[in-house]
Amino acid sequence: MRSEQIRIIQYASSEYQQELNLRDEVLRKPLAMNLFSEDLSVDAHDIHIGFFSDEKLIGTLILSPKADYVKMRQVAVAVEARGKHIGSKLVQFSEQLAKQEGFTSIELNARETALEFYLKNGYSIVSEQFMEIQIPHYKMTKVLV
Image (cartoon, rainbow, N blue to C red):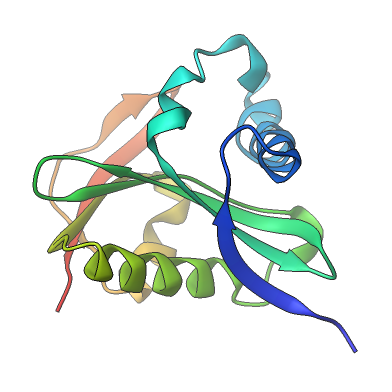
């Protein structure tokens, strides 16, 4: 039987290194980019969340606290783990955590290819299409109740 757990990833830990590798594999390599060439110092101030299956990281997302909201970013699920609602479970966990931390809304920049996923999870499009890391995105928000 598989052991599944969603938990906070400590910055600069071995689990954080797994997170970086997953983010690079899922979010950057398909765009012929390299996560490790980016300035990752901002990660030190963020909340990192991981979905682990038998201690292997197969999904991650980051919450970046802002003044009165939190920004969700770098949502990634391993290719072999897709279609198992891991992304939705990560999003739900992050929303509960954000509420516990006193935030009232979440904002994110969704890739055009992920719009349906976020719409199904209760997010609303609040901007025109814009380009970020060379691909179309939309700003989306959700009020936490």
